[in-house]
Length: 217
Image 1 (cartoon, one colour):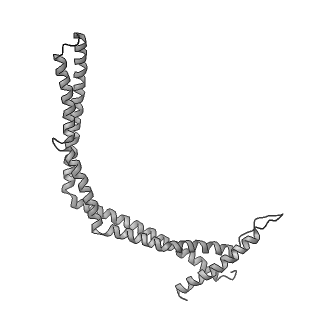
Image 2: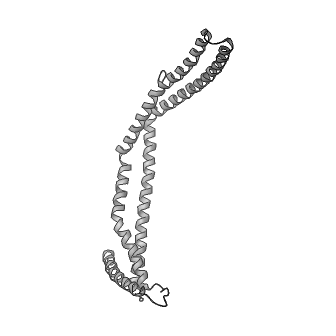
């Protein structure tokens, strides 16, 4: 007997046994004064096994379709190129922000210029008393010093990141291969997941076929 014929036989027997199990369950659940748990019969076991087999077999086509779509999406050159191009755009945008005389460099200089200008203004301002002016000059001097240190740290971080991003740009072909390897690893995962699903269905089917050939059935 071919595997297809055996599967058809399982389906037909399953439908019949499912009907018997449902009828048997209905009889067992009738009210009784001495209600006691009834052990599962071979028919009940077969019906449960058949139910799991049918649910997994019904979901199999979509699982195969999803796996196929995932594999195709991760094995095409266009997919890797699209991911690399997106990264290139992000890197270019970041570099434009942190280049010399760019937005990041300017904001640090703006903060430093502000504190220095405040000191200059205070030294020439006669609006405050001598004590007030000396106190404000002392505080703005300390603030200017802190601002200068923060701007120096910002400049060092800006230049370091800029250099690293330029290195990344010069190695985008290698990065493309690494991305392809990453996609291939994900492909292995989805293939193994599908394989596991097929084997689980086969396990249920073997149990069903064994029980169908058992004398107790």
